Image 1 (cartoon, protein in one colour):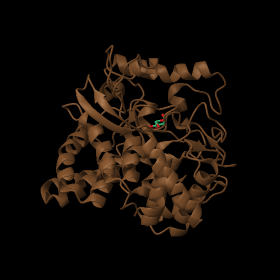
Image 2: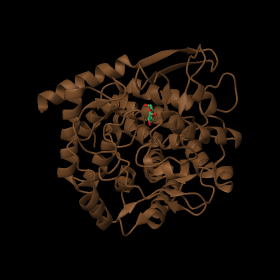
Image 3: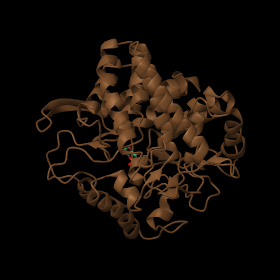
Image 4: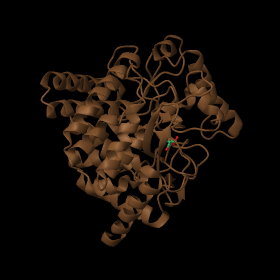
Length: 421
Ligand code: GLC
């Protein structure tokens, strides 16, 4: 395993270097440097991908890691918003969906959507390895603005949990838990066109509503308190509190930590289903639970103060169930027994396959709560997948077959699973 891992590590380095893009953007009037998720399929800068890239890069190239995050925050709007895709150095027309996901413009520079807020965690990782206080001082004010924007604009019912207004904002684009809201028929939709249309309809609605979560909630449109997004949000708020502490700013640190706890408590109080012993997303004003067992249901285990007993049930009843998440190549994005789980599905994504960023989050959470054996097992299987199949976008959890994009950036997170803390 050791030799195999060393090879994977070298390949990860080469991949992140090869996916690096830099230049000068005449429209933004600034230089950019970022790592694209996959040259063949995703050439722009993507929000959470960049955060993952920076975390991995911090193991061998702190400058590139810092530049990655600096490029991301350099496009922040004055109100704090940062879009989920940034079209650096664009010369030609964009794909049609890009216009639907952006504020009306002939030349959109970024989308009007968010992605799971991993940013503070990424800054935290890069600062811890670099101990560069100038970097910290430069990053904290934009982080404050970003997390303030999320609280103000994305928590229309003021319960602490933030809402997403499109499946794409979850980072798990076609997660089947959203199907009932979109009118997609489970188990598996047949016609591509009809499904594509369902997703685009949400984009069109958001465009018409000015990408406002307040309006989406009031009008009964797609507005979901997603468990994965909120677990990552709470984790980000804790990280932000830490960053302020390093700067000696105790009052701000305490404020962000209080907010992190509020989010964590709201997840525990509102999203937990004691019968199933798992966490479910909540939809709309009535906060209807979306009861399809996806890997999202386990995500609160990444948080520090979730009661031991609940972590235990998540791990024993769900994660370690071979019929649910303990697949030959864990962790599938949907429980294997769910009718909507299709392990070989690739034209709709996140409907069963195993993804490395999910494994990374879970491994960290498991280690934190003392489940070392389980964390090691997932890490070993992840390394095996990458050594055999290369850095693919996702993998079949039953056979391990690689699928989706090649040379996929965040699959290099396998390095941080081994070397991170
Ligand atoms: C897919 C994923 C999304 C990711 C993007 C770029 O759309 O669902 O989470 O950010 O690809 O890699």
